Length: 368
Image 1 (cartoon, rainbow, N blue to C red):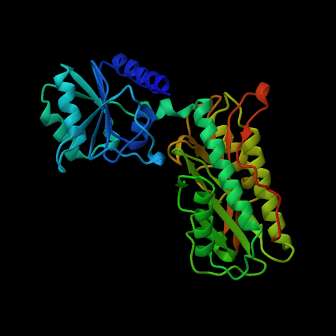
Image 2: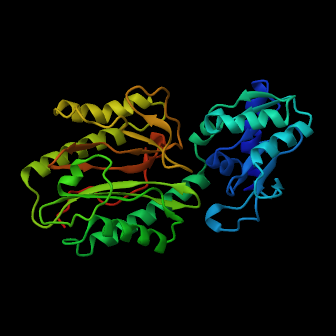
């Protein structure tokens, strides 16, 4: 893996030099981990003029879930509890006789930006922008393998829950049990707070679990994700509890399923982000559900649960192969109920079988 991290840092260095910067300071934790193999608490990464340095505080962090730093990197530990690794890294850049330093302005506070400038006043601070985030969009097969394992864990946890008795249990209890099962099956932890919504609560987008108990005839909407070696995936499914689904529940479910299928089928290399969104959105729009639809139909996943690309009506850009994304349309009827179907997939060319579905739990409307 050392060569992988070195190649990533080399690509960033080339980007900086093309923009006139001799060095770069990476402070966003997910970006540090992507380039260094690990992101200990408060760590930053200096892409230096003469050498790259991981700057951090405190003792080494050997927790497997946090990763291990690339052995090719020098690790510089800031002495004392009050030192700022970003300021120390700027000082190191100045010591390497760099004239300019590109920084992630979108991740720095004003106070930290000023402190960086004051410690090395001869350094010209430039904007790195989202350069690292753009490098992270296309995943290598090792990254996709981590996502695939995470998806398998999430599928397994959800499948076991569906085999248990659900009536009478609270949303909060079910969410906690799902997160425990994720860890039991090898996940680092949940990729995000697990959502469980029952009955009328399923009609609220972004609902957080409450003490409402599952009742016969409820929609049960679940959205969960697993983190494996730092990589995060997600899955969302909707079921009916107890008796056979009501006609309105079947109609609503079939509509969302058709929208989700349209979005999945549009995931091909070269497809515009907005066209993927349009494929799913127009199915719901044509059925009279334009009002209240979420701003995005899906998004990228990886070291963060919400990455580029963003699949929305105004999104600019086109899909590449080996980009993992979610497709997650939903319709939520306040006070009544709602349906959300969410998969994690990897964009693949048709010659390789088309989009690779990572989350394989059935999308059939089950009555539990």
